Length: 114
Image (cartoon, rainbow, N blue to C red; front, side, top):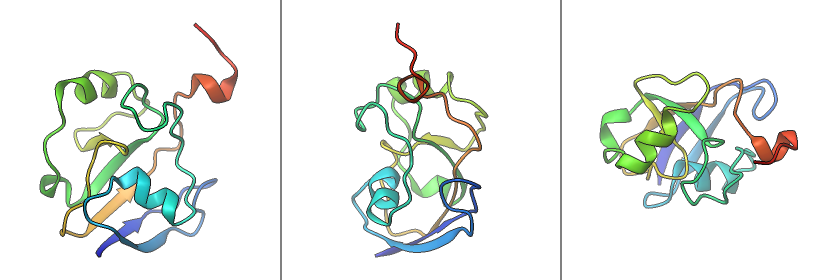
């Protein structure tokens, strides 16, 4: 197990959390397994940006993002150099500090359709 610190998020994790994350699973899967309801409108298929997270510590331990993820991240609210899609960032043995951005672009949640 790998320690993951989740910084406070007003709605999803008001007090922050320290969880034991399972290596080999994504950040999103680990958060959901610990009842931190990170949006994932595309069901973790790398087709949206609703699971956007900012990896404050441990970013370099993650495998590099693939081109599809990079293209999607360009559309994410609050993009930073250490942003990742939670569904694509696989936890390894290095501890992580993760921040869930205040906002997410979630068309399904907002009731919009193309």
